[in-house]
Amino acid sequence: MADIYLLLAIFLVLWYFIYLRKIAEAARKQAILYCKKEGLQYIAIARRSSRLRFAKQQGIFWHSIFDIEFSGDGQSSYQGTIILHGLRLVDVNLPAYRINTDLH
Image (cartoon, rainbow, N blue to C red; front, side):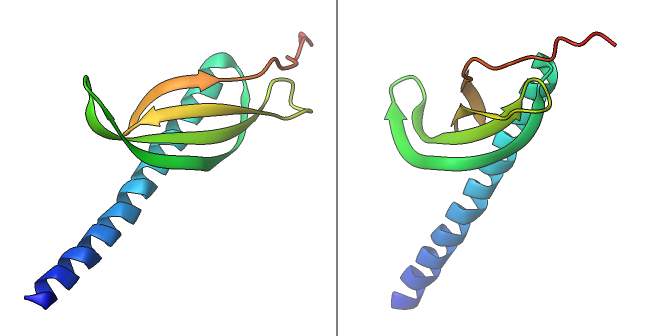
């Protein structure tokens, strides 16, 4: 009987890491799409936190915050945040940034 619990615990830990990786890939994809849509240069993304949360409308979900590094002019870099609930993009917060005003 103890073997079943051990296998279940191992399975849950593996599932946890695989699902967090899936969330990270979704965040990266959303960040790249957002930067492309806004005319920004995507540089990098890093997970700040992931927590299990509960809301009446959504039930239980993973609330994940990612730091995104981007550039508006190709020379300077800025950091913003992306928030996901599960695999769904909820919010993007970017600071004021310099844009490229050269018209070629």
